[in-house]
Amino acid sequence: MFSKRGCSHCTFQNCPVRPYAKRKPNTKQADCIYDCLDLWLVKWAGLLGDGHQLHGISTFSFQTWLSQARQSKDYALPNSSWSQGMMDLYSRFLEMCKDGTWKRIPSYTWLYRSTQLNLKKSLKLTSEKERKETRLFPRNMDTEGVGFEYAMFLNPSEKRMVCLFQPGPYLEGHPGFAHGGSTATIIDSTIGGCAIFVAGRVMTANLSINYRNPIPLGSVVLVDSKVDQVEGRKVFLSCQVRSIDGQTLHAEATALFIRLDSTKSLQQQMSSQ
Ligand SMILES: CCCCCCCCCCCCCC(=O)SCCNC(=O)CCNC(=O)[C@H](O)C(C)(C)COP(=O)(O)OP(=O)(O)OC[C@H]1O[C@@H](n2cnc3c(N)ncnc32)[C@H](O)[C@@H]1OP(=O)(O)O
Image 1 (tube, rainbow, N blue to C red):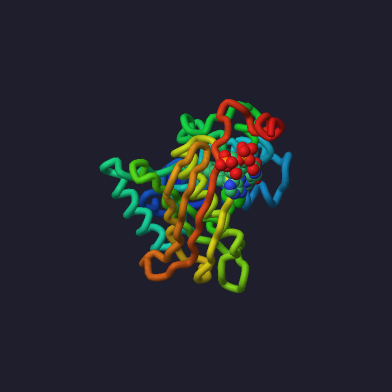
Image 2 (image 1 turned 90 degrees about the horizontal axis):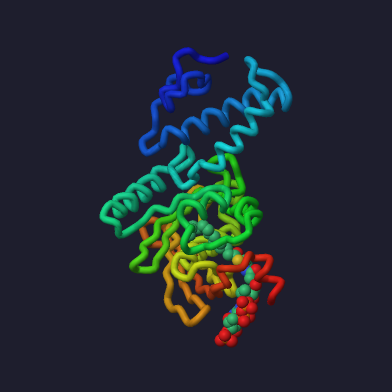
């Protein structure tokens, strides 16, 4: 079952999945390992179920290990489901990160990991439970390409956050097009990320969206948001969702976020209102 050749994709020596595959550009070795193990698990552990032994490895402990590995996986890196358009746009923004104008925002399934790495200063989560158990909604599908494929980039001096978004088939509303709720989700997340960087801990108080043109599933759009004004605890933002060539305006939105008390956990905050 195990290949002695190893996987040229990730150099994982015992990987039976992709012995001949070429490593994709921009794919981190670690991500590839997780992909390979994912496939391996689906193929073998999934068929057998928990508690079986494969070459001395319990599928249960392997699954636990994989779930821990997944927590440290950055989902905002390219994967095989990304279209050429998504890759090109990603490379363009990566290029703009070189002089420090833009910053790539890594993205993890669990907020815990995100707060450790990129929200440490701006989003102070005080409750341990809150940090460890907050699973980010747009990262709720484990299979690549079926749901929200996205990567965000922040321009701190312009107080601007962009999101490259490729909606997958599970986000379907009208046949062939993204559900308006999924568009709202990605707008809220992009605008929300922007507001967090500017104001710290915030919550959406108002989000107003005008849907101008439907978004075809599998296409790539650019969600472009910026902070317009900050008044005390109120952060006003606006956003446009456009096709890559900029010719089609899919949606435009305005939002109000309210800054919360960063020293309190969300539960404390809500009970004191
Ligand atoms: C960055 C890294 C990458 C991204 C990773 C992470 C991404 C995560 C992104 C996650 C993104 C997902 C995010 C989500 O999904 S957040 C989930 C959806 N949002 C909610 O559930 C919020 C529910 N609402 C509340 O909890 C409270 O109402 C809040 C906290 C918002 C305000 O209650 P609070 O008691 O604290 O404040 P206040 O009532 O004294 O009001 C204060 C001021 O604000 C004005 N006001 C209030 N509401 C409105 C309104 N609707 N329109 C116009 N104005 C409004 C109000 O008049 C007053 O003004 P003034 O009288 O002072 O002039």
